[in-house]
Length: 304
Length: 304
Image 1 (cartoon, each protein chain N blue to C red):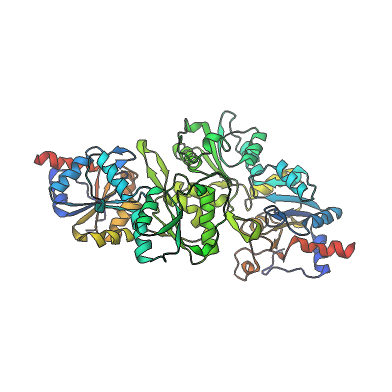
Image 2 (tube, rainbow over the protein chains, first blue to last red):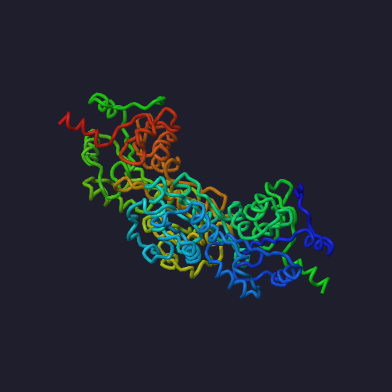
């Protein structure tokens, strides 16, 4: 289902066709279901409605700061009951890839630029971590940038980290420069992420750019738009791509992800992208555009 | 004096010709005169010899963390007497440009990612700064990323900062996204810098890449290879480019700088670049290559 220009559903019939066309609904979270800690109006109601119609719901987030358990609690606070295995985060995809595909030896570690959530997911997959939340690496003093034996660390995994600092960046850079076999991973490539009030903050892709730029080497990235995330989903859920839609607020992450996975794509305008971004010359074009997932309430209201 | 392949002085006569050919000797510091806190063997002796021959000596450093006064003290510790007006740093060039060329209004500020040295140079040129060493901006807690009125800040100046953190990066990014008139400057573009033991650390260019990457906008950079630095030098010293040589350890910064300024270029191998980097296909080729500036002692020894 490729169109040169996106379709804008307006009528109840347009929306009804959407629900008829797709069995699996994959949702991005930030900018779609919520913005920071503010739920999108009507999101909970729409998710409940889709479940009542027997739709499979999957959440696909590039936010690597929380574990899936923490996301489940965030959903609950917003009035949405979600099972852990419906949540696919870039932290989880990173951990699954590093343990199952890379098969990192038991005695080796992963140096993490990141927070508690990604550490938790890595540990749950049996991976030893260093860096991350270690107090020694969370300092503004350049007390200790020694890395010991570089070959103890099999990979550097960069992800979003509110405690980003020179010690963490230095250590990650040293591991990568002193050990050519050290793999370089990024949980995701998002340059920015939206919070309340339309403010953009720097994302993982911006933070990891320091290392990629100085190193002259690109990391393998797990988040959207990488197909790795879809392979994780497909390993746990039976999915027919022709009956699946990916809904997101970013062309470069969500819509590109949907296209890479061969599913239909729907852009919402409650996050990063605006209507101006889907002009004739946009390099990535969604199949469908709606203002907000809250607009799907047109169906629950019309059928209630 | 452009050659397709560099010339490697070997004999006393080769070195003597060098001294005869150039009246002004511009030296990079890190990787040439010293590496971290370790002086290059023979550097002090060579500088004394060149001064004894009536040569004008100028130091051109992209290290933006020290003021020129602090550099003068560092030279003194290494046994070299240097006048402040012989030192041109990227911090000084930034301050001169922002005050004299940009002519920033008195009531506006510059938001600094950087340390004490660059703040000092800015203040000396009458520029009001924010960020920098302000304790409120030197934290790993995301306590306050509010920026007040974005139009109060006329420019963001990114430079090397061992206390780089998310608050500073966020504030800089907010000023630039909320105020399209906010200028974006970088003290220099060095990706890395060498310390003792051949270890490379991340440089200003790597740190500022976070913002340039997320913003999709390149900063105006003052350090080498930008000609702005040479304009600063030429404003203070009478220089004949045809009788001037630039000596440095980096092709992308020092040798490119020399070429941009129309002076002869000499690479030393005591820093970042190695002999392998001046192969036939090197995009930037120095006119001359010597192992170390210490090798110029061949002259002081032969004439003493």
